Image (tube, rainbow, N blue to C red; front, side):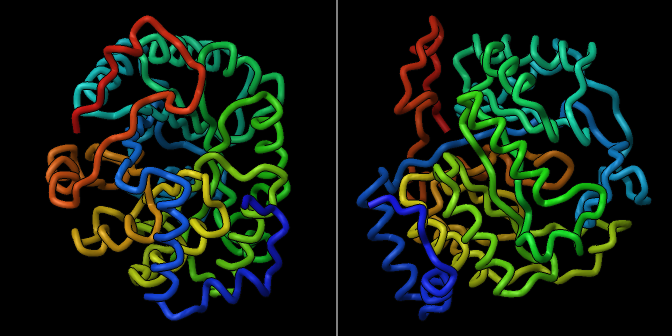
Length: 333
C-alpha cells in the first residue's frame, strides 16, 4: 500500500532498526513492487559548468569558492549529441542535462537547452534536466520539447537547510517541485548525506519526501564528495551503514519510486554497492563524471552488473511514450 501519511516516529522506528532487519524488510518491499534485479542506468552531462551565484556549501561550481573547476559556457548542441550518442552506446537509458544556474531564465540559452532536449528525446533516450529553479510555464516548455524528468533535490531537512545554503530557501525547492509535477514531468528529488547533518535531519528529509502528495518518481541518495575549496572540504566520508539505512528506509516509505545510488559511488567497493542494491537501490549514474566529481565508468559498471546479476532498465518503461527510435534503444551495459 502506498502511503503519504508517514509520521516522524514511524520513520524513526524504521531508520533505527537493526541494520540487517532493515535491509531484509526493504528487500521484501523491493521485490514486491519492482523487478529487483533491474537497474536504471543514467548518464549526466554538465552542459554549463561553474560560475553559479548560489552558496551551496558542498558545491565546487559556486563562483564564490576557490576550486579547480573551470567556468565553461553552455555546451554546443553538437557536443551534447556526441556525449548522448556515447551514453546510449554504453547502455544508458536516461540522459540528464545539468546547468550551474540558480534559476532558469527565458533567454537564448534556455532556447538552446530546449533544442538539446528535443534532439536527445528523438534518440529514444529519456531526458532529465537539472537547471535550478523554474516556473510552471518553463516546466511546460521543457515538457513540450520532450523533457521526461526534472531533478531538483531538497538536499537536507528544512531545519538544517540554512546551515548548508543561504542564497535560497527550502520552500523555493518545494515550489519548483510543485511546478514540475503540475507540468506532468517526472519528479526526481532527493538529498545528500554527509553534510554534517544529524540522524534526525536525515529522518526529517525522508519525511518531507515520503509525505508529498505524490511520491517522487525518482529519489537520488547522494553521499557527499568533499571538494577542496568548498566549506565542507574537510567532512569525512559518510559510512556505508548510513547510506544503506537511507536507501532501505526510503524504499520502504516509497515502494514504487526509483532509488538512485548517486554521488559517492566511486568511493564504494563492489560489496558496499551490492548492499545498497539489496536494500532497494535500482538506479545509478554511469560514466566517468557526475557533473564535476569522479564516477565509475561504464566498463566498471558493466562488470558489476555481470557479477551481481543486474540488468539495465529499458527507457520509457511503464509509460506510453512512443518514438520511432525507441525500438533501437536497447541498453547493453
